[in-house]
Length: 300
Image 1 (spheres, one colour):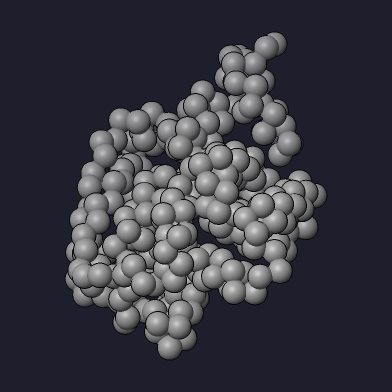
Image 2: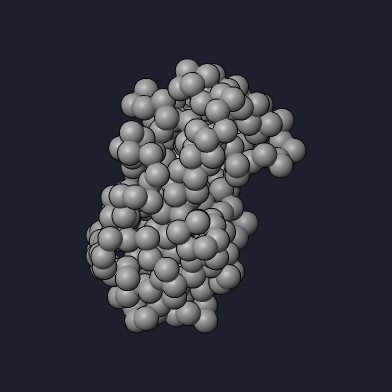
């Protein structure tokens, strides 16, 4: 029996040991093509998910990255240190999840946890294919931005024991070495330090956007453990103390030290997918039928 899946989906899933033949058409099969969304999905995604009693609040990676880009554009100019690289740093922050643009249309259901896969538990061996796709695209836009994004992603996986992931990490180290040479960063201590500083800016903006996507608005007691002691990036303009975020109210996030020019407002698109609708129609259809809502958040 043939497959109804695009070739790139079959290839990726096969590397993870999944058989994606058209099982939904086999009479009497226990396969549930609606609930397990490798079937009839346009792609894979690793959404940011906040679970509530009756629903899942779902934010796509690209929408989250766009907010990180807005945050970066509102940071004080002198915090970028190198004026010649500012636009490339901004590009890296905005486009760091570019690989997921086409894949953000269909969530993947995790049968084991009975929840949609999130960016936290999504299989790493599937992630790396989209990591590479996005990194290749960003590098074409800007070598410096591509280098920053490569450093960003490879930092997540450097301790993995999976062979496919280790191979990806090795390839990214080669990319980084090549780009560093082309950009004349190799052997220049000052430029290397500036690069690492720009990487911290990327990560900070990424995590600040994640803060409002992953945490319940206004609930400081329930803040994810990753954020409780502040953001891990240390900056000289904060005398090397971590920046701590907390909710003043459901619409306002206060920073212990703000790198922003002034208070700013962002708009977070999300879908509140009702659990009963997932049970009735499957995760893909329930997601598609759920309208996009906008939550406004002020940073100060």
